[in-house]
Length: 172
Image (cartoon, rainbow, N blue to C red; front, side, top):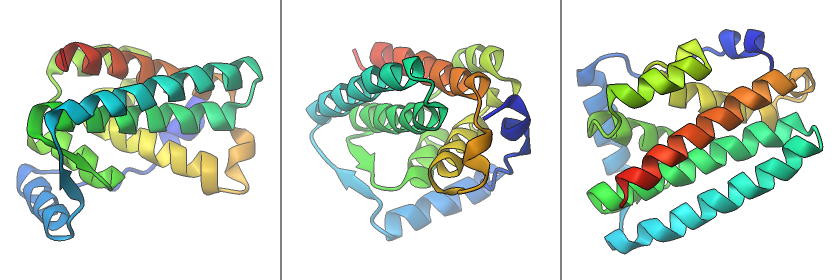
């Protein structure tokens, strides 16, 4: 995915606090959050690290599609580790996980500042939605996935690494 494709991603995500709260409540009603022991975060971090290790192999093999996909899944599992550690539940749904991060204000401005240095559109919660959409493109768009580039893979990989480092610190 080139920066151009990242720029073209249209994020459909609630824009204001009221809509975020309403969407979060909808996730709760649909039972998208599962309560677990807070120690369960370790399993999600382990899975995250496995995704990162696998991602490195794909990067070395110039398989940009799988780099982006695995970077996103590493982010998703790290998000669940953070949710479990801080709130005692994980999300079965990708969008609901992003909503929980935002509603519970689990990410500070410092991380967004660091993420925006990787790519400007990562300056707020929409960066997570962009990663989600990038993953969907890399997995399901039978035409556009061929346009994925090393630059896009680097952006996704670096987002994942930075975010996972944050989660590891937060979960200690």
